[in-house]
Length: 559
Image 1: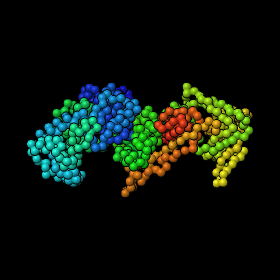
Image 2: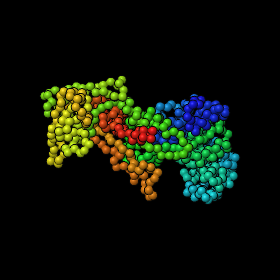
Image 3: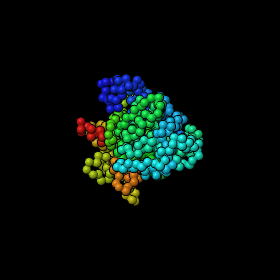
Image 4: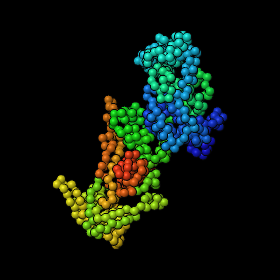
């Protein structure tokens, strides 16, 4: 049992009470995704809650695929979901599929027909929808609602045998067409789908609806606490009705929690799929996508995502969570763990004119000032280096402490240099900066103790490696994507600057050796990771998160 001293969320309080009362002997939860897309960050919250809660109380959690719609599901998604769950740090007690229980579902559907609680309806989907009614208007009984048990059994058998076309017949539960809960107005529980199923092939041509299957899956698996997001709250009476009207091996209970809504993000599977199929993003793992694999490719760690899910907690009401909190959780971790390196994203050459001819110096550079055990690396410097174009200003404005004519700055880990001149092309673009170095300032400290404010990162022209650096931002410009203007589509809010590419970047040699998903802090830029496509010959890096921590600063103010 969880510690009594721990601040429990409302679900943990329920579980503690259930264990104490003896209603539950062992806690059993499940994470039940439909394999019709890749998992997003909202699913990560559910994964952490279901797997984490089971672990907290010494129970078990199953991974179950709700594969009841072969028209949308694929083995690709099954494999991706398993990979994401494991990457997040969880392992399931059992791997289950809704399709494991198709035979049992079918028997329970026949039991409902025999009990006069289900009937075959010949109406079209449009007619069923029109006759369903509204929140203020009761539904209208189907003209087929009072068919005899024998006729319904015959028609359902013929549906199962494949005699009818898709959309011509459905099986509906007979509940209450005047119920104030629209979900209880004779919901469809089986439909005809003549599609190949990723596991059962062509064995079935009728498939159960999610609402029908969900509770029964929980009952078969002995799930004690069926934890769902708030949109299923109005479905709970239906969940309970199906359980109460079948001879089930156990009686599960459903509980709802607030789903995760993140700023500048959409988390509709339909919309995410559209972004992929329209080519707006580069696949499900595009680092701008809110998918688990997208965050992984961008450089997020599983531990930072788990911490984020703990920080936002488990609530009963929906709210909007700032993406900055998620970035803060990651930034604090990477500050302690990421190796440092120097990368110049928009390089301009700087020539140190008094540098000794043929001399190449080798310097020590610490890999992480927050972690002494990370050690150090060797970096080289010679007569020609590259610095950031933005670190030079011909006519500096007030407060500009970087390089300008006559100004002295520090090269990180290296020497103090002073600008003596520069060259421009016909368009007025700086092409080369001339400098002199204080050769007695090796390591970056002036021998006479003079103070130098500006410190620049750099790379040596002799061993700098060309790299592609992807600078990612938010995919959308609207903070709350639920607040779209009337008549506008979510694609109207796509951010044209969500990806900028530094094609001409130069990185120090140690960075070029990075393996895919290795993480670094590029000095003065931010945290980056090596992309999945990187090679030593053609390094590719993705911006994970900037150095600026607006969330952390705000928390300090409030504290």
